[in-house]
Image 1 (cartoon, one colour):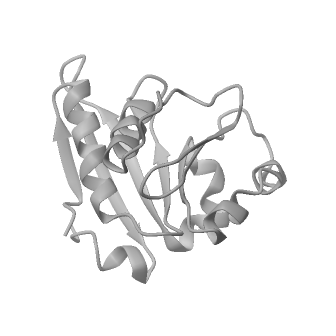
Image 2 (cartoon, rainbow, N blue to C red):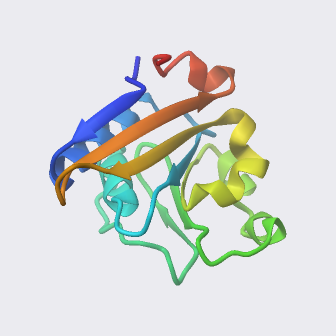
Length: 152
């Protein structure tokens, strides 16, 4: 079981938290990342990708909206920050990648809760006491996640 709260004190530990989540990922999983600018969403995704065996450099898809990486599972790394309407999220066709067995990691994921929130892991990354401290709060939504994440 994945703990519902993870505390990290460095970017390396935030990446390690992502690697922990990667171990539990299954085809079709959705992880929605929430947190302010600079909270560590991309750092977390780098850890997930590493844990899935991705060898490419993982960078923020802010300007490309979605990047695809190949590993144990195909990683769809989306940035929804600039999208203003739900239809713009639908237009990214992320469902196709999920149906093909990929996993979706969406930064600024609050913009996709209406689409995916019933069956997703919502990871909220909060700033901690020091510049590098982070608190990751994991909320399981749907049966597929509730069996993998501890309840608080």
